[in-house]
Length: 603
Image 1 (cartoon, one colour):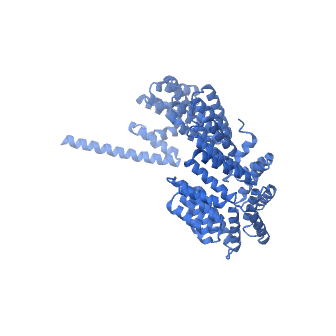
Image 2 (spheres, rainbow, N blue to C red):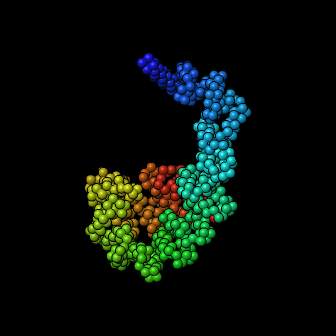
Image 3 (cartoon, helix red, strand yellow):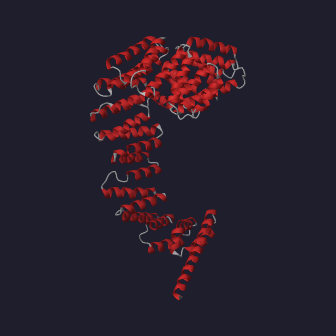
């Protein structure tokens, strides 16, 4: 019984002491957080005699001793800990930090180097040492730790990711890149991770140029290691240098005896980015070099798609060039028969008949045939129904359009295709002047998962709201919406006439900038570029802070570049645009175009 009482008494007193210590630690920490160093030091100093308290107070206590320059107490304290815990790396590093704070640089270096040497035999200790150096911002010694470990392991890629991260913190971009390349080389499955990291870190053109230079040297040194060629292709794509990416992919496909798939991917990216001339060259190369492969038919179709992009963006659009495209699509179908790629070609052919050749009946028949093709891809079928709805608008049968749009929306609920169908219905109601019904559709579409559709819905909703709020009769807005229908129908001369009449009738109306914007686009379509620029210039001059200002600035620059071939003027406008509209949706493309004109992407 006496022994039991003694044990209970000891446990109770121990518990009480622990509770008291915890209270003291908490109080000291509070003083520490409040910046009251003297009071915190008094309590920490009292607690430092208890080894059980050391892990809980060490960081704060030792930091305070250094910050108050009480080096004598700090040395006595840390040497005692090292004596008790001779294998504790943290205390040994802290002793080196103390020496450094006392400006004993040589002794500090000697201490750190000894720690690194001792940790090298054990991989776990090595990582712990390096991480603690990092936590104390001793980046040079963290590097030394990992570099010694790499040398000892005799593995040139060991600790590549850790070294890359340290170089990143230190701002050593080229060395950082080298280590990320080592990380990718160590295991090809790391390549996508490296791409994602570099995409976030290398945002400036000079950074990407430096990476490209490093990769070119790597490819020359190690031509059989495809990872460097893959990254070189990726860098060129980041810079939207599609032709440069094509050259690298072409060389890689030859070395690996590929089927042209990598080249095809680059061509499709170029096409998506409206780099039509590059896309034509890429797809034409595939059709010549890879005939008989699975990529041949698709590349033939995409060649015509890319040429179509060139024709449609050469103003005014030449009907003879459209006719050549139609004939080429038909030749593709005749040569290859009916399959998914040629059905897509027929769809494109139908749209050319409808919107550029005034052959609506031919277009309707083609689309109906495609829609009724057995086992047709559902997405293609839905797209053709939407196209058919558009054509019924052209021939003045909007009820047929509504029916088709609604069918597609119902069959594709909560998908981008369904949202696109709803947007088309909203635009149709807008053209007809039924703004309330249009806004009902648009309010739903503002929450669409597709950012492009949501943005279009917001833009149209804002247009309606801003220009009907003070006009209860809506007649001016209805007149403008009717002209937008003419634009949709490619009736540019009629639209130009009506827009010019609106300018004269409604001077000072809130729609004025929209009318100028529409006139600029009409004149561009008609090849009247000087007139287009004059309207755009009025927008940027008189509506500097309006929502259309950046659109007008960017379009003006592209007209100078693409249509007038006045490259110095285009460069000047892009440079001004980059300064004035840093938040514009066109900012990335403007930067790329400016660099291309400056000659940054010479192959």
